Amino acid sequence: MPPTLASLVHHSALKLTVRAGEDRLDVPVRWAHVSELADPVPYMEGGELLLITALKLDAEDPEAMRRYVRRLAGAGVVGLGFAVGVNYDEVPAALVDAAAEEGLPLLEVPRRTPFLAISKAVSAAIAADQYRAVTAGFAAQRELTRQALTAGPEGLLAALAQQVDGWAALYDASGAVVATAPEWAGRRAARLTAEVERLRERPAPASSVVGGPGGADADDRVELHSLGTGRRPRATLAVGTAAAPGTAERYAVHSAIALLTLITERSRSLHAAEQRIGAAVLRMLLAGEPDHARAVAGGLYGELLDAPFRMIVAEAAPGPAARAHADGPAPARGAAAKSAEATGAPLDALAEALEAAAARSGEAVLVVPEGERLVVLAPDGGAAVTACADFAAALEAGRPAGGAREAGDDGEPVVGLSAPAGPIAAASAYKQAEQALSVARRRGRVCVEHEQLAAGSVLPLLADDAVRAFADGLLRALYEHDATGRGDLVASLRAWLSRHGQWDAAAADLGVHRHTLRYRMRRVEEILGRSLDDPDVRMELWLALKATSTDQGPGMPARP
Image (tube, rainbow, N blue to C red; front, side, top):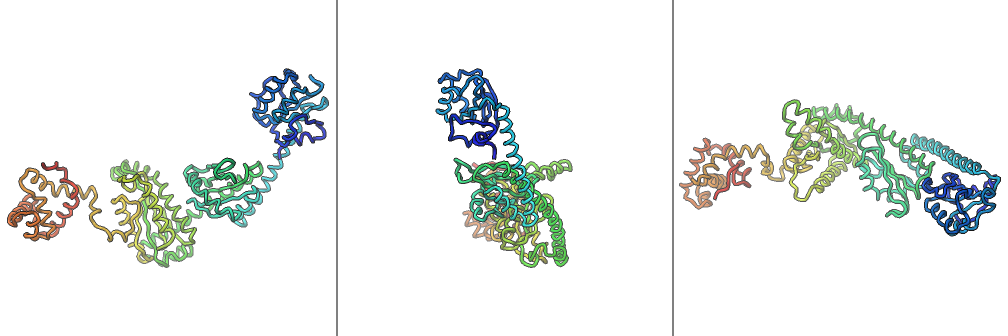
């Protein structure tokens, strides 16, 4: 530990005598400083032992000494050394009384002890303490490295907790606790997930301190450190101690950070290799070659290819402006591609959530980034599928209340899930996931399952600009006719179609004679140039009416 006033008093060569503040000699000394200024406070940093001869002080003036000592104590000076036999034969009583009142340790320095000797003693003690800390740090580094090589991250955490006399925890990329040491620290680590999530929003490397004296968790002080070299942290290390770590403990923490970063980066390389294998397996499945896919996968994906799975296809649209450019000429498409690169974060977050959930449950999952898409094969009913639903629900819950918003805006991911399928039907599952993805985008949803498509109505699918434009063009002539007050052709057509062409029932709904209705339908055929006997024409007209059912008419003013 660093030198203290007590260690200097007990130093046999210095011959120091305590004149005041005997109960505060255990305070660490950061440095020994000589100053004869009447006010040396502007040049103090705190923690110093100030050495004086009172060359410019009226050391026998009680009031002056009270002001002087009070200033020193307020600046954080830990002790005052007074040399006797230079300007004063003994320590003035006024200075002794002032130091006693303020509780500032006052040491008498004999004439034969030069200030330089005290400075050398403090410097030597500080150097020895630093050497011990460095030596202990290297020893801790060797032990942590040994544990990392032989017992993995769990062994490393156990060694780190012992080195810092506290606890340690490791969180995965999703913020879930994956290992703690000792075991009792699991509950404490679980309470920090919100702080870990906030730290993950900052580029790695980043750190923060939670708790400590006076905080909500005053029982310990926790340091959080993000791990990884990429834009998003791959993991987070938490270290809990009773007080701020010393130099040796700090060496141990930094060594653990370096070792865990190497482990996570190695895992990243292995993960990239697995993704390349996964991409090959996916291509074979989509090509209808499940046997070849199994041969290439080997045991990498466990029983994933032998049981029903879900195909998940996700995209992160770059936003309305970039989508408008995406269909433009080549230069515009290049700009859109650059914008789409910025949307990788939502897909990365989704992939991390699915992989973390699968890892915690021990299930295999195949994750393949495909340009601006993410394709995932996950066991039907497994943790990864549940995590996908939870991820989407959390995003939709975070939207403004009542805010109509298109899924994919601001890089928000859009997800489509297939029905359960086997390897032989992988191509069909992929198509189902794409269809669900398209519907999710149209409906402004984050996630849609293919099985939900047949459960609802086809009418929400008409909420599309292209469909509305078709309806506008098809019905415009009828709305223009009705706008002149020459008949209600649109209302008559809607009633006739809703009654499946039954003249009497439709006429009754309208309150007109059936011959009047027949005349109106002939006018519809004349204006549109189409025959209502054609079932395709009737279908198109009905869909067009449904697409504009909430409007007065496409682009038409309200009738008086």
